[in-house]
Image (cartoon, rainbow, N blue to C red; front, side, top):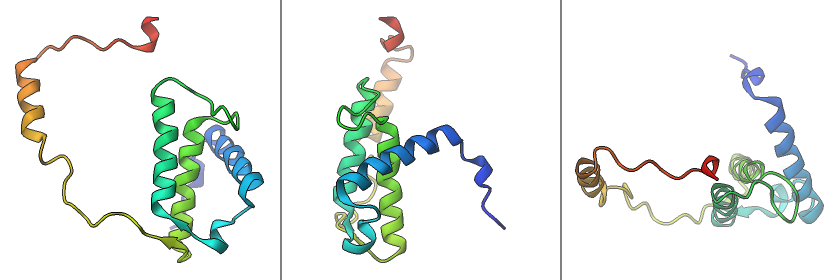
Length: 125
C-alpha cells in the first residue's frame, strides 16, 4: 500500500529539485502554501517551459535549469496547493472535449495522406 518511490528516476528528480530551489530563491520556499496560487499562473508557466523545450531550447536562460524540470515543478506546486486548500481554481467553465470539433477533420486528413512526408527532426541538422 506504500507508494513505490523507487519507480521515480533520481536524475530528473534532482533536476526538479534545482528548479524548485530557483523558485525558492526568487519567491520564498513553499510560498504557495501561505499565499496560495492561481491555476492559470502555473498552467501558463508550465506551457511556456514545455513550448520552449519543444522548440529546441533545453535549458531556461534565467535559471540554467532544464525546461522540463520547471514544467514538472509547476505541476507539483499546483497539486500541492490543491491538496492544502491553497489553490484558486480559475480554470474556465468546462467546455467538453476540445478536440471534438476537429476529430473528423483530422481523420479526413490522415485518410488523404496515408503515407505522409516524414517530419524534419533536430537529428537531421
